[in-house]
Length: 168
Image (cartoon, rainbow, N blue to C red; front, side, top):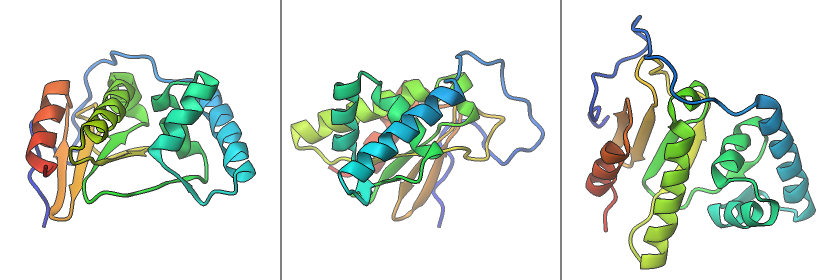
């Protein structure tokens, strides 16, 4: 069973054209360097997966923003640990041109704040494409009951969706 699309009218790439870009995507060479350095660290520590706490510590040590590190996972063989039944999936591919990395950082911050407050948390994941390119930035929220697409994601829409889907 799939959850409904939240906001927008969704659909696959049905021929609609995305709006003009609003953000500059990260340089792919930078992402590859981050991924390579991160793989070296993971090998040094003999880890099978990394978690968001590892990402936060690595960010503090290196000065690389957390959202850049998580996006760089797409260019690596590193698996991000999954702990929760609910996950917010961010398109960190072409949707970077419409602010998806800003949403990614916001989600990482929200998750950390919820954890510190003892509230229910969610996983944060990235994919290179969520196949709704005409409605950027695209996010999806995966739950045991299905997946809700969040096209043309805004901070307000993300807050509303998480309030509905993350059980306290």
